[in-house]
Picture 1 (cartoon, rainbow, N blue to C red):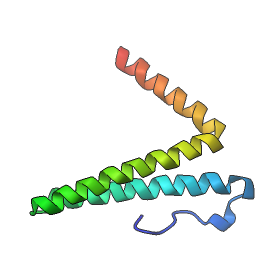
Picture 2 (picture 1 turned 90 degrees about the vertical axis):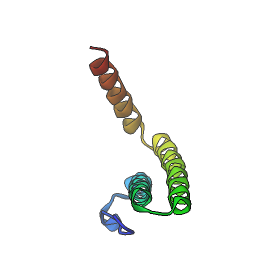
Picture 3 (picture 1 turned 135 degrees about the vertical axis):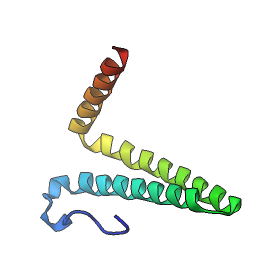
Length: 94
């Protein structure tokens, strides 16, 4: 993503805008995690590696913050996440 919003927010219905902003936040943080972890894997300096991985961990906290807010705003998301969790548990218990 690299600092570009993947959708046109001006085309989103007003009542859905906050949810979409939160989803974009999640996407941006996941993108940052991937970037920092990839750079850490390439870094030759252990100090640089250590700091990049620490920053990636902080971004994971940000994902949790955005996700928590999203789950407060979107009841359908809550239901679908629960369905997904149950599907994984059923599949893995076989």
